[in-house]
Image (cartoon, rainbow, N blue to C red; front, side, top):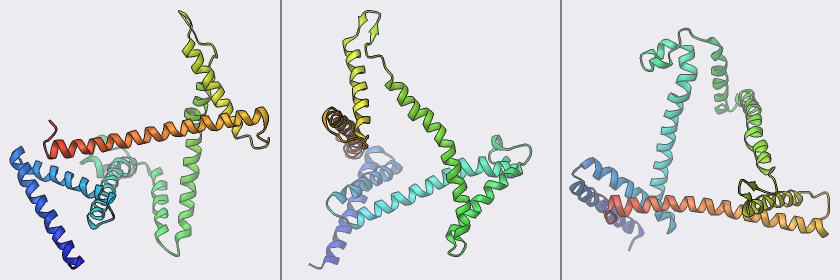
Length: 255
């Protein structure tokens, strides 16, 4: 049979299944709106999962729809959540007074013409000849972001991690010495120390130093494995949510 004919047959079958699903869900829920939305979510989920078999037009349709809707959503959120309160409301308070009265300023602040100019300059990236102008705005954004985030990361990540590593080797409680607390603190101390030893490449990893480095590798592998397992569990929870949606909300097999 002609491959094009097979594609059309599959398309008709899928379309018929969608129409039948909308009808059945509508009859079960008593709402055409629920029938359309539940069926759409179910078939889009199946289209995405069809990529496990091979790449196909249905997967591409769902992928493009997801990317397009996400881009439109975040663009709208960025405009109303960032540009309007931080730029439009500062420069033209009267323009947002009727729409968002809580954001309206009493007087316009023309200092915000500077970020407006930088934003317009950044769009020069789209011009083949004037693309070099956007580097000034990009350099300002990267430099400012790096400078602001450096202090925040030092406080929240580096210093906090160092502070959490400085622990008493013997964990004393009101009831006495806690064995498991002391074991945990000693394990953390040795693990951090051996992990740091592994990254000292100026000294050859031999003898006691090499043993500590190998123990550091083991600690790093345990850390990476735990992180990977946590990521997999998060993905499995998402998969379980979709399965619950398919077999519960759509098919009604799970009550």
